[in-house]
Length: 113
Length: 116
Image (cartoon, rainbow over the protein chains, first blue to last red):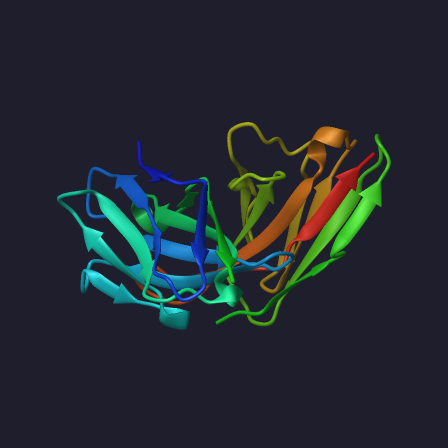
């Protein structure tokens, strides 16, 4: 069965330092993968998506993610964290037939001054 | 894209009562979804509500507890029936738009429900 594992439930960084949020997937075929962000008391916003085109995907707000099939990973990175990046981040895959989104458990990112 | 609004944004309800959550989309969409996000948890799909057919519920969710209406391509309701404190969650409406392959999925702001 398809699944998504976010390796860290909480990540804390200082403002201006790099961000790394880790995600591993399991799938019997080439998946479609996404990162969503949820700010407090707000809905989910799509950061970026991978759909079998370029393996390095650039998203909004300076975030990017690299699809690595050999490692079954889709880690989210940003070179320099901003205070406004503090939020919950979800790694998501989609089941066969483009039917359902499969959510990871989420990673809460804290950014300190 | 799609802009989704939900009503109410939050509510506090008594045990045993029911609450109907409304979801309005600014464009016509075929595929609409309802999710639950329990405190500190990820999102769980409750059901898929496509216009013109009955909602399809995921394992662990039943129509008697979470009846859904989908009267047209821009609107849906989810009712949480006979509520208990365990139903305290954020309920999110979501739609999928676009043609061909994977289409982007958009989410509403959510309805924060507290059951006393």
